[in-house]
Amino acid sequence: MGRRSRALKIVGLTLAGVLVLGAAAGGWAYWHLNHNIKSVDIDSALGDDRPAKTMITPSASASPLPSGSLNILVLGSDSRSGKANQELGGGDSSGARSDTAMVVHIDAGRTKATVVSIPRDTLVTRPSCPLSSGRSTAVAYGAMFNTAYEIGGPVCAVKTVESITGVRMDHYLEVDFSGFAKLVDALGGVTVTTGQDIHDDDSHLDLPAGTHHLDGRTALAFARTRHGIGDGSDLGRIGLQQKLVKALLEQMAGTSLLTDPAKLYRVADTVTASLTTDTGLDSLSELTRLGQSLKGLTADRVTTVMMPVVTAPSDPNRVIAQEPAASRLWASLR
View: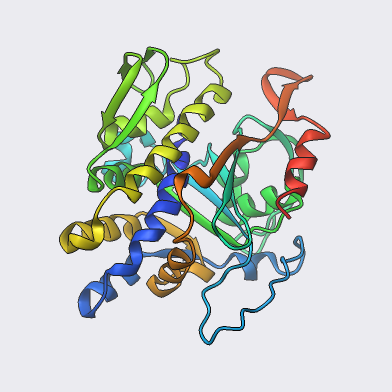
């Protein structure tokens, strides 16, 4: 992530955070949490020029929770807006990038999930994307994947992912630097184990091999670390991010939020305040409904993988999808 990665962090936190929202209720608290959430109307912007939706067979129960398969694009945003994001590495310029992306596929029955990371340095054909001005971006060949968000925001990010995967994104979730760090702190930190020493001047992370309990700022540095591991590429960082996803899910499951209303509210407030969703998830009731449908999903039933890639012939610092392995992976999620 460099900028990048909070995303990731995100995924875990996203699935996790969503499970937490259902408990805060009543009056002002409910109104406040509901109005924290920001949303983007991706369906209206993209229209019908998208992969087909998965057909879902309705349940026979009176008021069923959704149980069909689901694909969610989870992004981290290195937004430059606000002092908190700038202090955590967002920089001092305007705008934002999404240099880490994960497609979260939840199986029918919602007791198993697969999280697929897409390297930010992947070269793709970026499709024409609609802009809020009414104009559209031009098709770009051999563009870095993470430029989609930079030029066209969530709408272009979703369209680009759907274009390269052939998979319909049912929902969109985004969290920024500050929100991720605050969520980890609200949960009381997160425990991770690394098999090697990590020293990265860019992310300001120094961790000896072993098990560590990280606070929010350090967890964000862990997710952003690139140069301190492996060959210094984005691929090594993705391994750390996926480790963090699992750790966050385990932390969430082991936190007795329902018996601590004050802590529950702090977590829910943190999640909703840092969250941008599509309009299908832009209310506390919809997030709660999603969370309730995932009650059978535990960390040991979440599989983390990376889209198969190979070094790009045109640039040794970039990658492209490895075929036919990448296409087979995406086909399994449809």
